[in-house]
Amino acid sequence: MLKEHDRIVLNVALPHDGLEAGDVGTVVHAYSDGLAYEVEFTTLSGKTAVVATVEADQVRPVGDREITHARELAGR
Image (cartoon, helix red, strand yellow):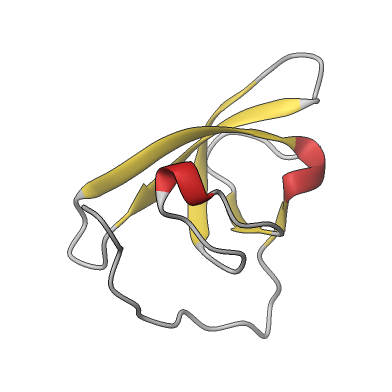
């Protein structure tokens, strides 16, 4: 189970929020049942872009050999 402050990667796109699979965020709240999380996605300059509620199967922990890739957030 993920915990608060863990970095995560989206497994799926969240088009309503302008997010794509592979986007990286930080868990800001883990629901006690472990079925969902509040995740903050920030721009590379550190500004909050989106805070989204995601289900546990929509995210995964960041891997040790992964790097960040930049893209412009659509519609924001």
